[in-house]
Structures are given as structure tokens and as C-alpha cells.
Length: 191
Image 1 (cartoon, rainbow, N blue to C red):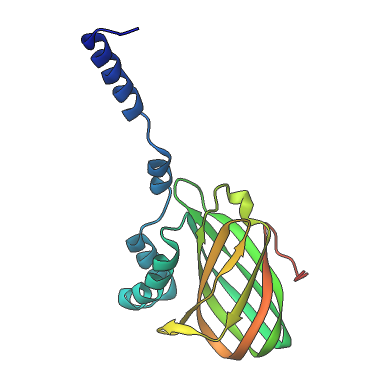
Image 2 (cartoon, rainbow, N blue to C red; image 1 turned 60 degrees about the horizontal axis):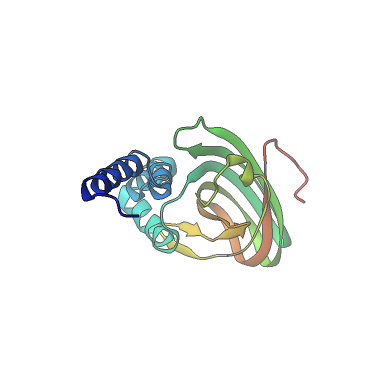
């Protein structure tokens, strides 16, 4: 069965109009993500560093991971003598949502000695629903600093990647493996 050209053209025009009135999934997710400029501005304000120092620290994470869905800005303390503990609290920031208070804690083990207090800015990738944050994220951490005293490592679980950027004071050296558990309420239990 053949339709006249005018009817085929009209149907094609209607189909294109219908398709173009709805945003694609890529457009939806891009609108919910933070640009590199937004993150650099937020990180430099939070850390109290120059925009250039924050940009250099953030640039590597963006090259590896792209645009984040969310970020956390907060504070944490940690210490270790082979076995370590880390506790923190901060605010989960998402576009088009109210900030949410979050807590994290976790153990570690390794060749790790000392203690430190840090400001933490965590870039979050593939989060989707905010409730997916509340789980354990394993990772390996070392005393590696990118620039201006800002260190970064990656934690991954269930296709979600966290990239904590830390700067702070203390005396700590070594390499350790462990995990962080994110919760809605503070807990002294690191497990």
C-alpha cells in the first residue's frame, strides 16, 4: 500500500514535531549535572583556595569521569595505626533539590599511620536517586596530592563513583584499603 507523497510528508512532519517536543535522555541528564565551572567555583569557595588551584585539582577528575550528578561538601576526621577510622558529615548538593545532610564513617587497614582533619568535597557520578548514596563504598587511599594540598581517590559501588577531594591538616602517611558507609544519621559504629 502506497500513500500519496503529500500524506507521507505530512506524517513525517508530524512525527518530527512530536519527537522534538520531548527532551532526550541525554538532555535530561545534562540539565541535572554540574559543569566544570560550577564545580570549580563551589570547590574554591568551600576550600578557600584560588580558583586556579581548585581548577587543577578538579580537572583530572573531570577528564576521568565527566560531569557529576551531585557533590557533597563537608568535614571529616581520621586516624590510623595500621587500622584506621574515618568519620565525616556534610551536605549532599543536587540541582533542583534541597541540600540533604549526610554522614559517613568507615574502617581501613594498611601501612597507614597518623591522623588528620580535612575539608572534603566529594564529586558523585551516576547517583540517580539520592537514596542510592546510603551504602558502603570500598576504595584504596594513599598519600597522593594532585596540587595545592588537595588529594583525591575513587570509591565505587553499584555503578556509582565517588571522587573525594580532601585538604586539611595533620600528619599522616601510608596506603590503606577500606570503605565508607554513608548514612542519614551520625553513627559511631564504623562498620
